[in-house]
Image (cartoon, rainbow, N blue to C red; front, side, top):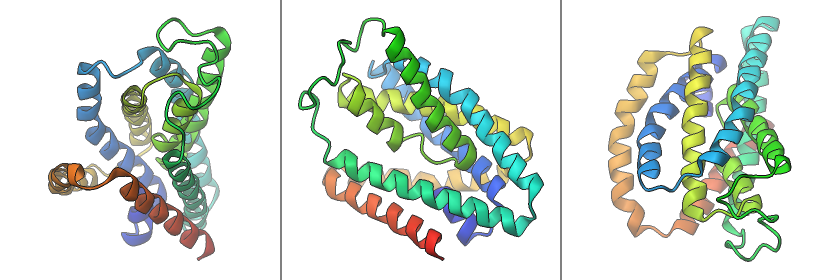
Length: 240
């Protein structure tokens, strides 16, 4: 939600909003990544092969954004990026809804495909893990959106991993992806460090309040509300 907020509400140029959001996201995800790693709730093999696909593809996404910026005037760039970001928001919102009603582990016949979630993956599984990573990475490089919920859905559907390991693997992968892509955007002048710092300072009270309220709020209704907000905002931007 941060990128569309920066572009639509604050009037930040789309490339700067994307780069700044990635720097902000990297900082906020680092603590979570460290915690999951300490708890051994990260499958490093899956994260590695996701990264092999996502990191080069994210740089392609950055290059695509730079090409758009060079090829059109500022107003057209804003219009194009709002459309792309809006479509991505709808996709992420729908994926969250799908995740809510996804059967728990063990209810998906053949989900593991013969892999136990611990031993070395087959060449076929490694290849499509790289492809999945590349798809998400390109979206992140272009819009800063999509590394979380979409990748988590893929992991839940196709990998025999517990929900905790899915979350940990997703966060660790997203942290590295956001870091590399954020640096790439910074080299293109697409990061406002002052704005990123302000966002981080502003997020501290939100994190404290959220951590206090989270145990008291049912997870499913909260996720439904978030998904509805994403779909609503995305659809509103597409139709405006």
